[in-house]
Image 1 (tube, helix red, strand yellow):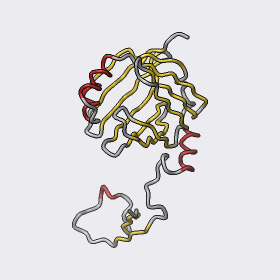
Image 2 (image 1 turned 60 degrees about the vertical axis):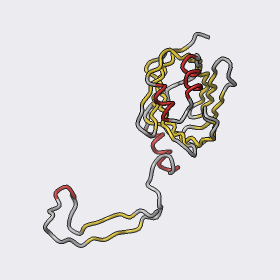
Image 3 (image 1 turned 180 degrees about the vertical axis):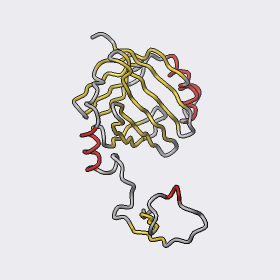
Length: 190
């Protein structure tokens, strides 16, 4: 895949370009074949970190309080009926340690082995999803929220972690089919 910059001589605003005129076009190959984004450009990543507000602290122990539209989301991610039913009734906790961009997230549920994620926001890490598939997870700051794009061989989804207030953490989930779910966690007292 190669990216080009398109120029039209004498035209600076394409929205006012008349359709009846003939123009001379030139295409200049760009040095990098990927579009520039904080996920794949370390220099731009550093600039975006320099310009974003200070990192919120997700540190603490969080317990699931409410869940909206989670079953249809899991179904889109090809999670079987039995696992979906079990997940709906299991309480879930996130135990988070944070040092700036460095995150350690332990997800706990009774009767299940805990899942631990350790990563630096802005980098990629690997984990095993609920269906047993290996996933690559790309992370980045989006203002004061953390975006995680989870990709397996059979599905992908977006998770956005944000603080609603000091006592409420919200996980917004969206499947590749567009199904959205919301999981609201309340901070537990130590």
